[in-house]
Amino acid sequence: MRLPSWITQHLAALRAVLVFTVLLGLAYPLAMVAVGHLPGLDGKANGSLISVDGRTVGSSLIGQSFTDADGNPIARYFQSRPSMAGDGYDPTATSASNLGPESVVDTIATDPEESSQSLLTQVCERSKAVGELDGVDGSRPFCTPDGVGAVLAVFRADGLTGAVTRVVSVNQAAPAAPFLADYQGVRVELAQPGQDYVAEGGIITPIRGDAPAEPAVPADAVTASGSGLDPQISPAYAELQVNRVARERGADAAAVRRLVEANTTGRALGFMGEPAVNVLELNLALDREFPAR
Image (cartoon, rainbow, N blue to C red):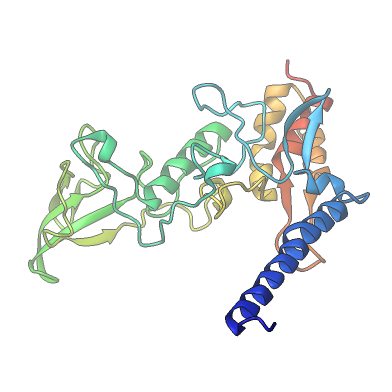
């Protein structure tokens, strides 16, 4: 007895589902697990975890913060780059801020919970903090001395042209003092919470200031990576921290610098990417060579 064509078609589809389920749902995953446990690959497959005295302290592939309970940097450790993943380096919330180069105006709301910083102010604030921590000039172009974006909303008599009639420092509110006393002869005002100066017709005008063109604080010290989980920093950021770490540990700066070099990897295949320093591995090496006093 010949089965109807629709039944034979369904049976063929069922056989295909079973075959591909076995191949792709069982055989392939098990084969990848087996390959991942070959000598030399097993550590990577298991997350590149690092253990000290039988205790897992982290992963060489996922960054982490070296801060105290209040979120302040622990001075005896090298600091990682900023992270926007959850509360910082959360593998379950890997993400970036989604803010771009045009994000220069903060949201100053009546309710502090509704306020938010622009990317420019985040960079300015971080640069100021790193400068204070490591004893270097934390100033950057388009940043105010108090660590926010140096941005004005300039109102003109004829919209885009004409004489300046009003100027507001859009990222500064009371009790701060305007970073400029006046602009083209007009007194600079502080921003008021809840005001949208762009909607009111203000022309957003960043002010460069007199900061050096090449800031002392490197870019990776003030910007988060795309994943928020970057375990590495640039050699320039590591070098910036050497004197502070050496001082806190009572060690010779040259010896700390040698540890930095030992934990620096070069470009992949000699030409891809940039040299980088693994922060966790470097800090563990510090604890072995120069235990905290």
